[in-house]
Length: 225
Image (cartoon, rainbow, N blue to C red; front, side, top):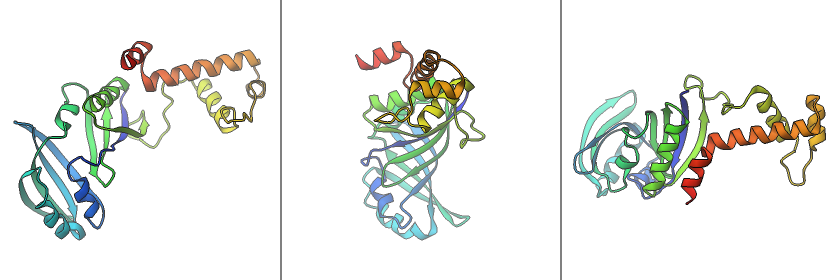
């Protein structure tokens, strides 16, 4: 099942983060990127007209840029093609031969590189996360959903409807608060089941949720060795 995720590579040493911070709107939109030979990337970027002068002045000081070509304006934005050195392992961490994913949107801000991607499944998503960690690129998940056409819709992460309702009720009514505001018996009464059945329902739901976000037991064991 395909999923759509918004992630932040929260590394302020990534290319153009300082430059984005200096722009009036604080961002550089990446239209496309293409790996080249010798660890280089060909980026096509979009800049708001209000940031054009600051971008051109600031890009002259970017040592990672080998070549910059102005393509021109359209729709109130200016397009540029930039050839840069990939000293940050973006090519290695985003090797599309290693996972099935499609880039929807990418923006460089003062925080790092924010990406929205569609992945073939959770395993593909975890592969990108692991590769970023392998190359020392900080990886932060912002949002995730199971319907690429409606990324704002909730994702049940493989939970049954009953498991999802039980977790939602428990969370909303304070079962996971400290101190706890909802007892297991009170949760059981909500669903017309015994306290033992409610506890088992939550346990199964929690296991499913953790396995979907962290991976299988075998995966977790390997990642912590």
